[in-house]
Image (tube, rainbow, N blue to C red; front, top):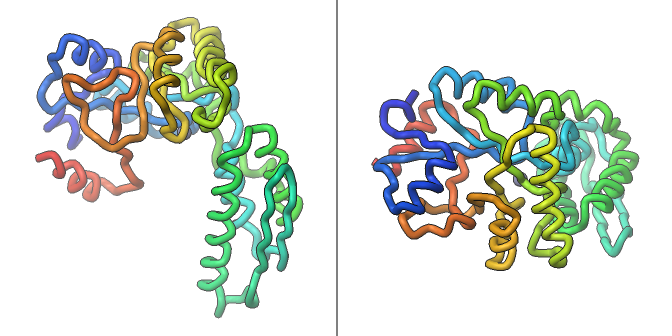
Amino acid sequence: MVLKSHYQVLSLTELGESIKTQRIPERAVVLTFDDGYVELLNLVKPLLEECQFPAVAFIVAGQLGDPFWWDMLENIIFSPERLPDILSLSQKGLQIEWSNSGKEDRRTRRSQDVNRERLLNTLYDQLRYINSIECNQLIQSLAVWANVNLQKIASITRSMNTEETLELVKGGYMEVGSHSLTHPWLTDLNSSDQIKEIKESKRFLEEILGQSVRHFSYPNGAVTEVIADQVRQAGFQTACTSAHDVIRKRSDLYQLPRFWVRDLNGQQFKRWLQMWD
Ligand SMILES: [Zn+2]
């Protein structure tokens, strides 16, 4: 509602056209959502329809319906009442040593949270750079270590499956874009794997949707000039980074910056928007 009264919400395609013609409307905003969580269908789609706002959902094409590794990791670390005292993991070139210092009881809950936070950050920093197959193997090992049943996580958080993705685009307010096949750091891949992530994700989503997939979002915002050019050559019209900036007449269509919105309530979001007043 705040957006409705103050801003003109464009589709990403309209924004792309307005950059090409160098006529970006005043106070224009584009809404994009990365990763394709199932909440997009349950929570976001009804709101977009109510406000008649267009938006793009960038989907990880090769992981439809699955939970993401970073959510599984968080669940493994924080859901058990107790974690084993020691983690000593040496696998696929990764070396992780962690000890659960202090007793896990109510009095030390705060220090345990800090301790678990430290473990989460250590693991996240290592897992984010390995390929999706190795990453999933490590997640499985960690789940066994922490005695966490990964099957249950899908009921807490996951991406949309094929049917839900098809449901999302019904009504025409939500458009699907690609967020790669497996959400890697594209900058870490060789050229043929980069092209595969970009082209295959487009082809796969187009096959499911029966319509053109026109926009791309770089996983983790990782992009180079070469990767941006691969996205252009694959036939996308625009691509979004995670750089925080506004869009200008001369913005690169294949490296569009965005502002990431934290988890805010309505009042906080209103204040956040006032940054541009
Ligand atoms: Zn992402």
